Image (cartoon, rainbow, N blue to C red; front, side, top):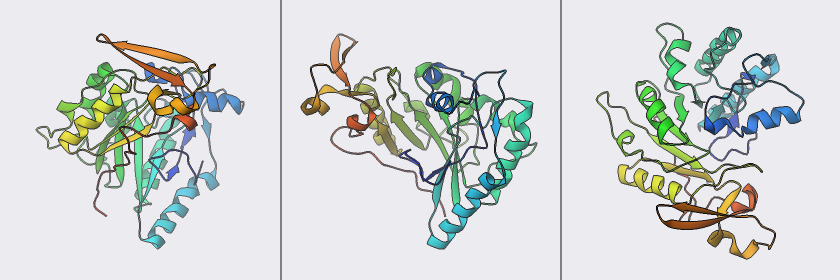
Length: 285
């Protein structure tokens, strides 16, 4: 958990613990909860325990940092894929403080702290703490309501090198234009990730939604990363592999219709408007 990762926008994943509580519609079909259940771990919910890890686990990022230093490169670490670093529980305080110390000890790693609890971040940090430059702070926004609720808290932070959004699962059209320009503090959203939901219970994504985000980012000169179509893909992208039994869903928006097919993440791919969007923000070494 682990040097190798299937997540397209990171080199490594690291979890200070496993377990969480669902907080919004993006959590409805949580892949982390499903994965934990497959392993026999009941870790989701306010009254369930969290799973903590031993010393070998905590030493892994130190190894990655040494490797990055030897290669004279930077590596991205997604934290946390099986938890939320800023969940408000007394039993998580020590592990969170240890994580902050670990981040300081690994200057060749860029730590991507993604949270749905962005409003709690300041309260969960030690008094007077400011994020070091190897932290990228992000929040999940699945629809316009969560964008309005969460992004304002993200833009309060000036010290992270990057402020980013994960618009995955993307559940509706999003207008991020006002957040892609600098505010009175000089802060803005520096990077946008978008993607559809994966898994058999996935909710279909209208192809117009990620396309609109890509155009908004291009206009504001903000890097854009299209992670995946997810379980559903536009029919015109996958027409040659459709079967009679393939489920089709018709999305109707503002009088228009678009059909998407349930073919699974692997076959759906991640091509949008004829190309892969693998843009990343530039940061100082």
